Length: 242
Image (cartoon, rainbow, N blue to C red; front, side, top):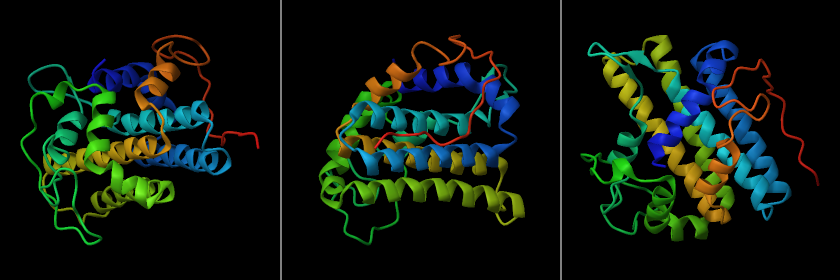
């Protein structure tokens, strides 16, 4: 399955339920933040438990997708459209270089130059999640492992904070560009959150694609339907052992 297929899987599986129980865009960001807290907790308690760490990472990724699902709308040309997450990833993380230093692997110092986006490579638009994991490992893996898991987790939290900051700018009127541009900025911020989720999985030695498919391939964990129809909704933290 391509990455876009996994995104569609989550849209189909939990999109309907999210529209009932998550009251707006900001609530979806808070829902993601809860998954991040659970991830940090399980990594702190037992980073070697690949099954639990993988499950927590998969849930973070799914909730990133649910933020994108909030933006779905009916196109003037027909059909449902949403944020172009895969295209944003391909623009920000081209397959032949770092968007900041233009080197492969990345040769950025502590203070990076401004990033640049690139026209997406057609092949990247069809990559599986495991191909994105391999690409970002080759591009940034050595630096991320050197800096450690706490660093990548902190960067992931920072990216989620930037999503919230952008939402607040839009709400208080300080983002003065077009709605099209605002949606593009949200896509880029979510792409960064996906990239740092992948980075965390790579540093911890978790196969994120396998963990994601294992968690969601059989449908809702409660009603077992591929499009959730139950009213079970839980925002309580996970209770990890140890």
